[in-house]
Image (cartoon, rainbow, N blue to C red; front, top):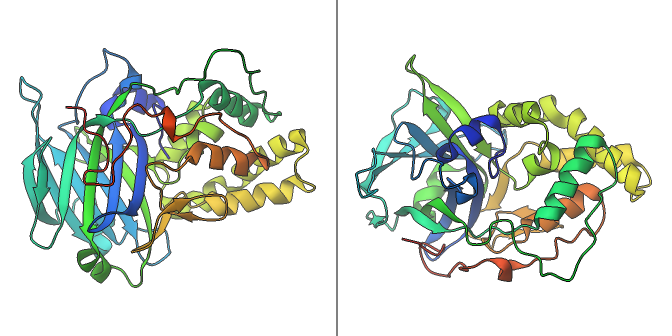
Length: 343
């Protein structure tokens, strides 16, 4: 349930921190995007992709919150000019949840180039403009409210224009487009659930999960000022989310909407929200337009105002962040790799 530098492990090495995951309809099929290594970590933070890590897109096709398909991306060490090799593997069935499974190599190449396979599969990895935007005053106020069980004390506007917290920032992005003809055979129907995972190799030969990301804004809302909860959100498997976090999430929502007096039955509303966001997986129907909105979650476009949607849902009120997609410096494009490469 990662977000920009959401936990101690993420702050220790920004290359392992997932800032966002997107799922939407592309030119050829379903597009999976994972952004990591945000420049918001500061100029001294490590750059590029971690050569001893795995970056994985996990896909549940049966509705049990257990992965049935995984796409694993790994990278080589950076050359003196920053160049890295990249490899894409696919792991199918029960092995998708097995760290020891090797899967099938689909693509091999270099970061910064578009890699393609017969059938239309393609991968791009590299530095890109961060497509996410956020009002720093609002996100901090929301985090304090859900930490303390109080109303959201949004800062009073002043005469200066609001600037996105990530204005001018770049990320390292992984963009994978999977044609329907290659994705559908691994699913029982067109409905899937997607989440991203980063894991780091351990000295004992295993893998330690660092970050996990499904729905946007879960960690900033509920664990922005609670490192212990942030770590648990990242380490728990999606199938265990409801059992582990339902009461805690419901209680925090109930406290905030009770303070705001926006729900007639705060406890019931809190449980409804917990049931909607747990397990923390991004649902998507293959072949349909993505929309991350109040009425439903169906994937997530690069221009969806996910922060405003999640803030408003969890507070049971229209909570604006006073920013729109125009706050992004380099907007996404309708063409692969969809994000704006930054070189």
